[in-house]
Image (cartoon, rainbow, N blue to C red):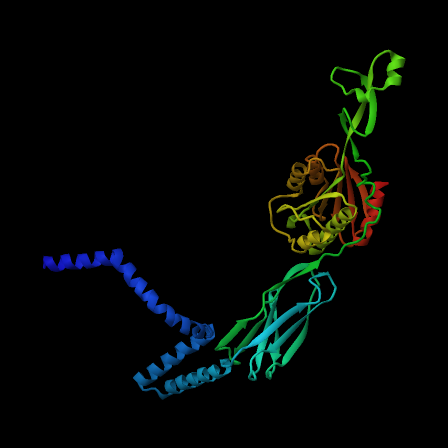
Length: 422
């Protein structure tokens, strides 16, 4: 008895050790070729198809064991449906598929159209099939007729662009299956494409010139020993550059006097767009704020200004106007804890040398929040707050050192900006 126990223990020990690895390796090696053949076949069976298959087996077995003819009839009917479904899924798929978008970037409301071209690359005719094209969260379906060798079939389609978004178009796939959806055989033919639906923007023209002047930099209140903006004269101290000695004044006063300058800096526009849902009454306010952000950014880049655009989540690309609008196409609201105050703090830290900072938000931000936000912007940076309030009248008011613009339509923004600059 003890010998049996010892042998059993050694056997289990072997299985727990190298034995199990060897067995699993052998099973895996043997299963791979089987799965290589059976895997594609089994993957064509839908969830509904597996359910019908289970019901078929259960009905046939129960009918045979219990002698219920009714169950046998149900089982054979379900079996016939599965066999008929196999006929729908059969057929070769030798296609060359092309997915073309007329434009990869459109503005909200513009038409976005595309084309799918399917060519039979085999030497035989191909049976009819269905072509599916995922578009965002939905998909379009096209009937593909019987194709002779070398024949081509194309379909045109339109994509709704009512809302700003980044829409994934594709991949194009061919689908064969039965009307009941028991079997579904699909093959992917193309890679997905991105369609950028840009926000609406408006040209600001000269509206921003007062904020973004940059002929020789913008004067600051920081005094410098050498720059281009003359400020005053002071007495010479050892170490001063003799090139800045003002000789006429030195001769008149009998003391060496040197020029002192105000430090200048290059125009840098900082735009902070709040994506906090609590800062907006509805989606229309947020869309207006995004359009204002895009208008400011594109104008600054046209005028070759330094630009930084931030949200609570990240910093957007500003290498070109196209990259900026691409990023704005995908900006979405979120339920974040960071309010406009935290966004202003982030902006002041990230762009301390900005010449002008725009804070963009909706109608839910209060004057007290705005005043608290402006505290985090460094001194010397002009703060322009823009409240997006669709349908409201344009207005301008001063809250401390911050200029608050209320904009009801995108077309009102250039005029509001000129008034703030006057």
